[in-house]
Each structure stands twice: as C-alpha cells, then as structure tokens.
Length: 115
Image 1 (spheres, helix red, strand yellow):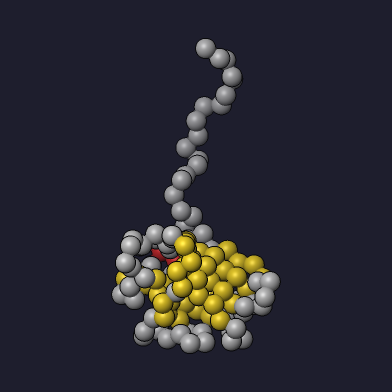
Image 2 (cartoon, helix red, strand yellow; image 1 turned 45 degrees about the vertical axis):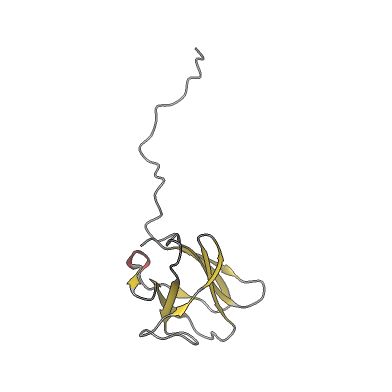
C-alpha cells in the first residue's frame, strides 16, 4: 500500500452548475453580439430566446441555431444597447435558473441553461 499523505476529502467542491447559470462575457472578435448556450434539452426539442433586442419580442421566441449536441447560438449585428433576454425550451418552458441577464453589444456571452 502506498503512503501518499493526502489530505482528507473535502465537501467544498460541487459538480453541479454554478448558481449564476455559468454566465460569462468577453468582447467578440468580429463585433457581433452573440449568445452561446449550453443546454441538453433532448432530441427533437429547440431552444428559443425572447427579449427586448433587435428582432426579439417578450411574447414570441426566436429559435437559436443548433451548433452541436448541447450547443446553441443566437447573434445580431444590430444591438446598440444591452439586450435583456430569457431562454425557453420549445418556446414554452422558461429557464428560470438564469433569470433575465443582459447581453452587452459587441460581446460574446456564454451561459448554461438547465430546465
């Protein structure tokens, strides 16, 4: 048996999602306002965005573009002010865990959505 002198296991670490939904932001290289969402919502389902930005409405969602398994994208060249938004599964089930964050114009934002 090896004697590695390791510290006892800690309860301080979690494999769950961050409480803020894992929201991060950085300037986009091309100046486009972009939202990248990680969401595993199942085959046949779509992710929608509602909000107050260009092309968006709080009443009817716009589908995000499917990038790859669990990755979705929405982007606009027309944002001149912060864009408040909410995410919906199939434009009917709101992702309440992330609230209504704001997208800064010209930034790429990444968020994890759990339904």
